[in-house]
Image (cartoon, rainbow over all chains, first blue to last red; front, side):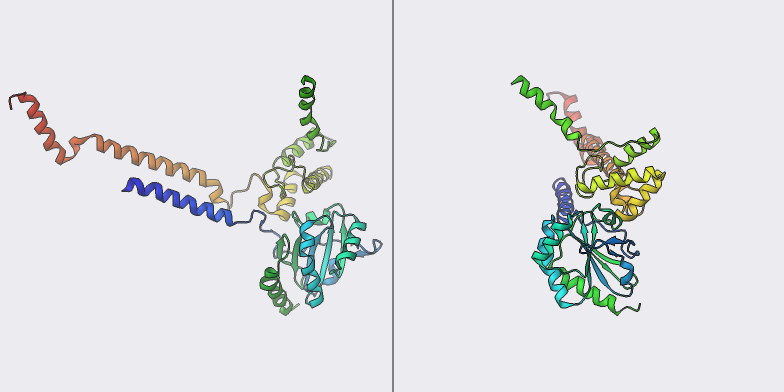
Length: 177
Length: 154
C-alpha cells in the first residue's frame, strides 16, 4: 500500500507546485520603490522641448505616471482606457514618453487622443532606469507626498482600473497632505 | 558548398558585434565591468544577463554600469543602485535574507530528504532479507533445518 502511496503523494506535491508556478506571472516583479519617494527628475516636455517639467509641481495631488511609447503595441491597447480616465477627470496622468521619436509620439497622440496632462521625453531611458522600468507600458500611482504607492507592469485593464486603481486613488485623495 | 559552410562559420562573430566595446582607464575597472554585466539580470529577457542580452534595456543598463565606473563608483555602489530600482531580482547571485532562505537552502533540504528516503528504503529492504529476526519465521526456519538434517527419511 505504502509502495503506491508514496509516489502518488510525491506526484501530487509536484503537481501542486507546478500548477501554482503556471499561474504566476514572471513579469510581475515586486518593485522595491513601493512606499518610497518617487525619483525626482526635470525633463523637457514632448510638446515644447524648451520647457522642462518636474514632478515636484504635483506635490499635494494624487497622480498617475504612465510610461508609454509609440513603438509599444500594448500601449495602444491600454490607450482608450487612459482616455476614459481623462474624461472622468478623476486623476491627472503624467506620461513618460520612453525611448521614442518625438515626432512619432506626437503623431500617435494626435491620432489616438492625448490623455496626458503633460508628457515628458526620456529618449535615453534614464528616467526609466530611475523608476525601475523594464516593460512598457507601466503605470505608477503617486500620492500627495510624492511617494510611489502602486506599480503596474504591463497594460491597464478595465478590471484593474475598477477594482484596484480607482479605489486606491480615492483612498489616497482622502489622505491628509 | 564548402565555401557556403565556411561563410556560415562566421555568423556567430556577427552576433557578437551587437555588443558595444568599452574603453576603461584601468584593467581593474574592466574586470569589474565584465563581472558585473555577467551578474546582473536583464529584466526583459529574464534568463539572460545584461552582458548576453541584446534588449534595449540591457544596453541601457550596461551604459549605466560603464558610466558609474567612469565616475569612480565602487562595485557595491553599482549593485546598490540596481537593487534600489529593480529589487534583488536583478541579481543573479541573490543575497541571503529571510525571503531567499528557501532559495539558498532548498537544494540542501532536498538532498537531506533524498538521503533520508534512501536510508529508510535500505533499512526496510535489510529487515525483509533477514527472516531470522522475525519470530514467526524462526519457527519455520528451524523446521526446515530439521527436515534437511533428517534427510529423505520422511
